[in-house]
Image (cartoon, rainbow, N blue to C red; front, side):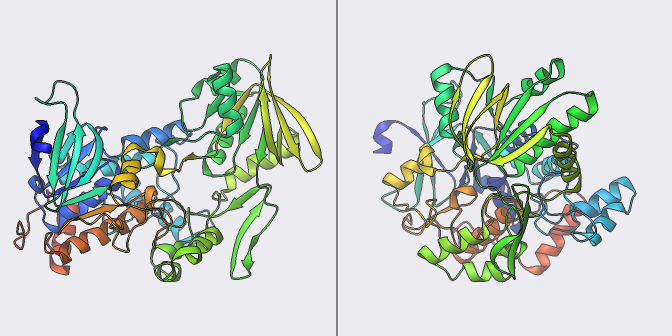
Length: 491
């Protein structure tokens, strides 16, 4: 059928779809293990792996000098995790302060986290070292389908005029999918307001460009309503409060939480999370033990509702408790210009100012504001992504207890095997599987390691043993290109 359609067919054993950090760390493992660039194709509509993440951090108020929410040893450019970001920063700045900070966390200091700019620079360095651009193929992937003879066809629409046909079919034995979030998620009342009134200026999502909000507040006093209680809400609040302090502004902030946390909470004394003033506090997206401790071991044994219940217990919206934010919010509460409360917004009405109709515990309240910033997150339904939806409909894929792609412990997508081939997935699309924390730097690396090990068990990729790993770490530290593996075979 593909031959009769006239679509150009290209053969490559391993294809990864997405081209973001999930694709990058998987390719990094395979290249370090010794897989040549000619055996890998990265199909992507972005120019470099950190492009989307860099955009999201920038618009959600984490500019290059600021620190992201990631552990010091979670390095997507370094599969060994050593030297850590803190050690690298200490060396670069000729200072022991980052190391002392790490030693004192989280009792005497906030968790140490790397600057966004350092992460992007290190990714760029590793991208060049493993010859990532040589494997990159630009275009939009339409679908991944099983072949009658085993393996898969991945259908790509390349940029117009770059190929002789409008579509290109990549024929491979293995496919890896890491496409990230399907898109932006708006609260229903805000979506209805934007669609009805066409106002994309005063009602914005924190993950879309909204610098005009901060610039407008510099020219005239105004009120901003912030909705949400996660890390992005914290960053937006800090930006508003930083500008208020730096430029002497009169900005007032109305902060609406759907769930208002008043203190420590959890099922028992050994499983509790700090909280207060509306926020649930946690250093990282998930407890640290999900990456290599008791929770990781426990989750690998759970299925169905038991697994979903464990996710509900350890998950939920949360943010780090950083001292600077706490000081700013306390100053705002004391000064009366920062007001936080629990409520459900029924609708937003237009006018000279926006009016939000809020159902609060003590009754209905009408709250006026000049801008509304939605910080409630990114769209999570995998059916909203064209490729993932096709996998569910035509590829044999199913949903896990949280509604995302169901994957094996090796990150092979259940129900999609084709002959001796395998289809893998990692990242946020697999949240709810046997391994939590999949949409974090370290989580993506754990998934990549599982996938690389499974490919080695299948006899396709070389196994990364201690001798080669040590030799390749030395090459990484010297920034020398990856060498091929003597054990490589094109089986």
